[in-house]
Image (cartoon, rainbow, N blue to C red; front, side):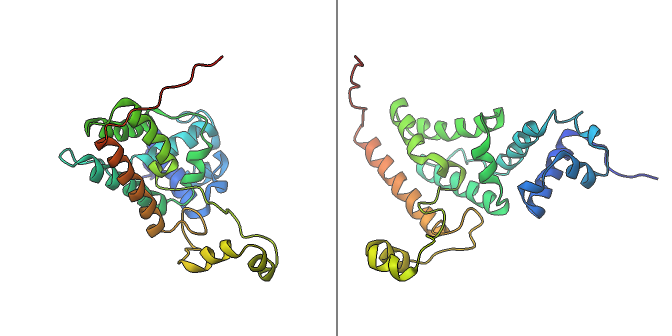
Amino acid sequence: MDRRAPLNRDRVLRAAVALADAEGIDAVSMRNLAQELKVVPMALYKHVANKDELLDGMVDVIVGEIEPPADDDAWKSAIRRRILSARQVLLRHPWASRVIESRPGPTLIVLDYLNSVVGMFRSGGFSVDLAHHVMHALGSRVWGFTQELFPAAPAVDPTAVADRYPYIMEIAMAGAHDGDSAVGPGCDDQFEFEFALDLLLDGFERLHRQGWTPPRRRSRP
């Protein structure tokens, strides 16, 4: 007797996330997913129309794992905790940052998350203009990852690098680096992520207290 759970959208999406976790995002295809679920590929199309909808749904599953904010938290601690929760989610799902960046537009669940982050700034007294600018400043940090300054090591002789680029070598050798970071190789370890996040939040707080307003925009000719 076949006791498998009935196929539905949630089961398909969670199986796709598990496949990406186990084998990487490049292994996720409708055919491979059908094999994992022991169904014919056409059975999947009743629940996800195509690969793009599958990827969107996988992002929704990931976003659903981010810890919701506590209602009684101050804006700064609430946002910090929410973003660090997002980072922990990405550490569990190392492929997720690549997929998030690849999506051409946000789903409703993604918009719910972004709206909640903006809402924490607004509830903290930030003006619409300041909330707008701080979201741009946070960038991908709102999802728990950052783009690397140097995505790959230079393909040159290290001695030549040290001679020609002494300041780059100084900072490269000065701090601890996390070559096995799940959200990208290089300097993006937990300390550096939190350092930059705290620096931004402190700056946002200072601007908020100063009653910052945007400079008058120049009219275009």
